[in-house]
Image (cartoon, rainbow, N blue to C red; front, side, top):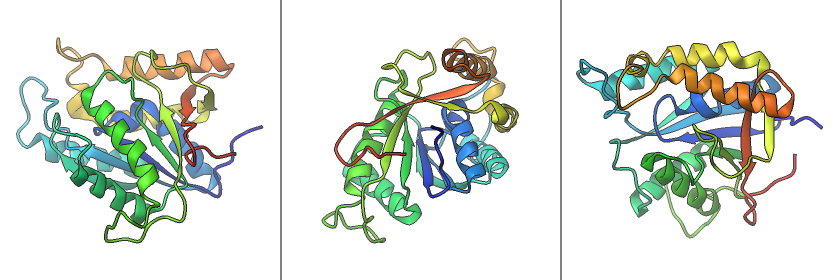
Length: 236
């Protein structure tokens, strides 16, 4: 049985510009091909990932790079605009994400794994888990009305593939070129490939989709774990 996203609205909630390219751009592209509405919510500004020499107004530069990448995917974009390193599960950030959920009305949300290496990713994971539940709660009031039901939630892979074993693999073989073209938009981060505090993004992307592809018998795959909490799990 193959996943069919034609009736879905798929929202990826990521910490930084370029995280969607790493973990779920292929899934979003596949959903878009099926006829789904797709969107990416970037919670952080990406203002701390400086190359050498540093870039003036890096947050603005990275926003432009993300807009280029999203245009290739034909995805709607939402912004949290929170400085890097300051993302936390607070009432204010919950309300922000709840309003985004209620505006887009996702049926499926893709979120960072709770075991991820990066503190912003872990904070995004906690926020996403909470928001998928409270977005359907009438008691949590935002500008837009609550969802009729919580969306399904899938946890994305981690950069080192060291989170809990994935249980769902999506064949993204036909979307590898698009995934790489989206990554190429993030020039400020590709410039950090030789930095001691960073590593080449393309190597990570290729290792992820090739390894998960080899594990699942296809050329390239992205791996996920459906969240099995009550009302966050759905049948496809």
